[in-house]
Image (cartoon, rainbow, N blue to C red):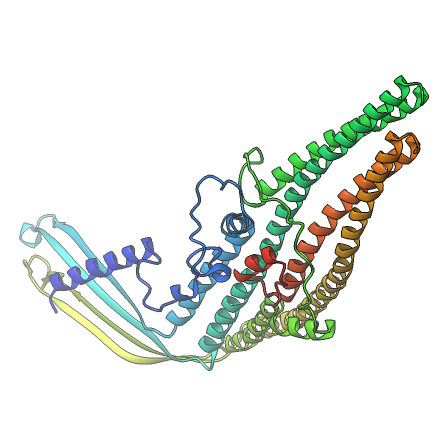
Length: 489
């Protein structure tokens, strides 16, 4: 091995290291990139969401709203970047099984001048270019489980990050659907308000006609005018609430609150399905097995257990293969006043290095104690996650049972209120009914319409909320929500 070859090797190795540092994912020899989803929404919408959007659709569908939220929500993007970081940590842990090779090279211009007073024959003056190079190899052969524990810890944390991302996606899915339903309900309420205002105006016209004919006192006109203005006030209030709901939906799907949007209407023809036949106990047991929040907590516990082994290994010996080779062309001088002669030299060694920690100031003992405490903390976190998921399933299940009944009742109530209002109108125009009867049925119909909208909206969201509590939301649930089927299958 000559000096020039060694220097070329140094330059090549340094170049490769620089390229590898600049493009962290350009080369992935340990295949950690396979664990990173292609985009933030990929785990839930694999093959369906490209996370590339133009202006909002006309109308903006539930599917598009959810896709935009999953792709662009800061929480989902943050969970995605955590997976990238944890995948890189797995690569670092795997790299500990490989040898490390370092190279250094040096090229210097050396001027050496020696002047001996009264003995010029001993003086010297020479100039030369000196090259030197060095290669060092270090390879841990055995460390009593330290690297294995580090890798297990990194893999468990990666699995936890993947499960956590799924949990975040589930929650974002539910939040986006809830915001969408709220915006749709607000728009439907505005349509209902238009009907209420029209009904109130019709009542006012009828009261004025009766008053003009002298068969009703002027107080009836005043009462009808009051009801008409109250309907207009409610319409104006609901207009503001609709704009607020639209702005909230835009924010959830990462658009500006002032983005103009049109939405799908609220389908009043769907009926509650009968697919929730399993007991709530079965559903809670299922969620405990599969919910991503619980899976994430359990993987964090696995990582904490690996951390105990990792801490213990800090106080154990390590066995390394070490090697070094160096070469230079430093000139030699046989004696004072003699010329310098070109020369080359090299040296190297290969051997086994055993490192045995003897005393670390009790640091290892406290590191093990800390790691065990973290295991205890994570065990509590697992129990807490199970309790929270069980409560969510229980609450969502009970809410859905209530919603199913209210959906039926609200439909019947709206039908009856409509009939009562139409009957009161006929009675009032014929001179039999009173203004109080007319306004009372008018108010009851307005309330029935509002409760029907609320019942439909709550039922749609709570079906999805139960699927979210079970940790089972996926692409197919959007079609299920449209058809009226239950998302949990």
